[in-house]
Amino acid sequence: MKSERFNIRITPQEKPAIISRARRAGRTTSEFMTGTVLNWKIIVIDSLPGMVSQLKAPGRNLNQLTVLCSMRKVQAIKLEEFEAMLANIHSEPCKLTEML
Image (cartoon, rainbow, N blue to C red; front, side, top):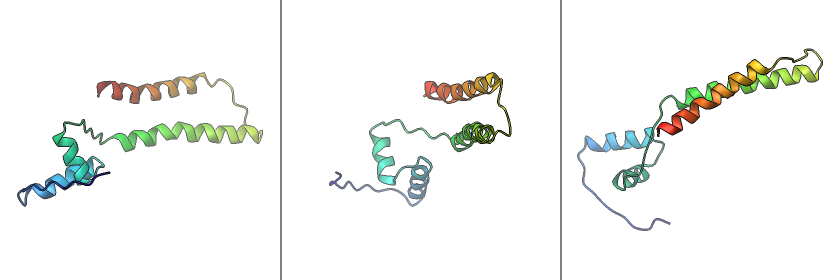
C-alpha cells in the first residue's frame, strides 16, 4: 500500500511529456516515474496490438473449420501446413521476449 508522498518540481513542458510517456507505457504517472527512478525496465512495443490481432486470426480460422467439420460440411485433412504456420507464429513473440 502506498502511503508516502514525494513532491518534485518540473517545468510546464516536462509535465505533458511525462504524462504522455506514462500513458504510452500503460502506467500511471506515479508508476512510471517510480519505475524510471528505480531503473525498472519499462518497454513499450508499439506493434504489439497488431501482433496480437494477427495471432488471433489463425485461431478464428481453426474454430470456423471445427464448426464446419462438426456440421459435416467439410472434412479437414492435412493440417500439417496449418500446424507449421502456428508454430512459426508462436516463435515470433518468443524471439521478441528473448531480445528484451
